[in-house]
Length: 464
Image 1 (spheres, helix red, strand yellow):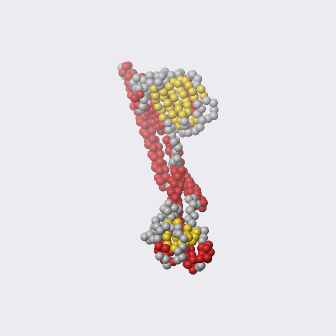
Image 2: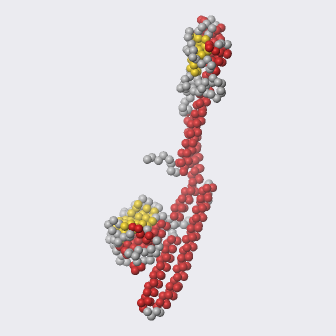
Image 3: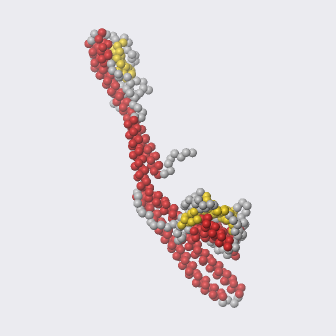
């Protein structure tokens, strides 16, 4: 289906204004045509009156052999005159017509001696006859006039129809085109000046949504735009302050917890009961891991790392090489040459968390890097038992672990997926999980590219 209504603000304003101008000009044109028809009808009546009255009087004052000369003298291109034995207007001719009454009065004739045949209602000139004298009624043109002469003959007159008003007059169309061009130019220039701050606001919001910090925007443009920019600046400042305050709070909390944990560990070492000592130390170790993971989670959300253009494929390959060197069973199945504006250390950590989960709970990880529209997507497949469908979202909650596959014995505290999703969403992307039909789990990390593909040759997989 073809979309006729423009999407941009400039296009919509231009369309609406042009439609309004066209409608207004059509109304003006209709009034102009109507009034011109009315004026032409009036002028036609006056012209008939001015020609017939002296012609009838001169015919009455001259000899019959001179009548043809009189008719030629008074005939004009707009009025044809003939002398006939019979009138061309029948007896039903409108003798009460205003022109008939004026002719009879001017010539001193009986009203029945003058007959008028108005144009039919479907003729070029339209309106009601002025039988009652109301001035607002539009007169119709005259089709024929018959005037009885003293010698028994009739002076028949056939007015020629006035020229029709053209539907689209050249000067009028040119004026409309010039008016439309001026309006379009004014709207485009004015709207672009007014919407330029909105475009800057949209870009700043997009950057802020990806976690890129920036200076406050200049408050300029129309008053409504200024208020929107001011509200965005306040929101950006408050969110940055909120994140900083929360990070400081968590850092202080983690720092304060380290001291009592260390103190408890020293006291546990003094216990004589070896079994109780090991249980207490194991609990303290888990508390230490939770504290460190919580601080790492807060640091990732603080988004302090600058955003840079990064070779995504090189980042993924380098990470897999490092993990393979640690003895992890990882494999790059396929890769595309992508460049993205990301915080490389944060994305690297998110990928490491996802790959670590795949290796830990699915024995091995197979990685696929591809481009999907304007996004870079990394799929990480494992051969594990998968996750129940009703738990696929729940596992992203902080400290949530599934007993069947995510227990404290494996070393996790339930923050890996939360950190990975937090990093991806800070870039304007996301992390999702899905059970594969052939078995195992697929974790997908998606982030916007923000740039174009490099023209370098693609990377292909090799077993790790």
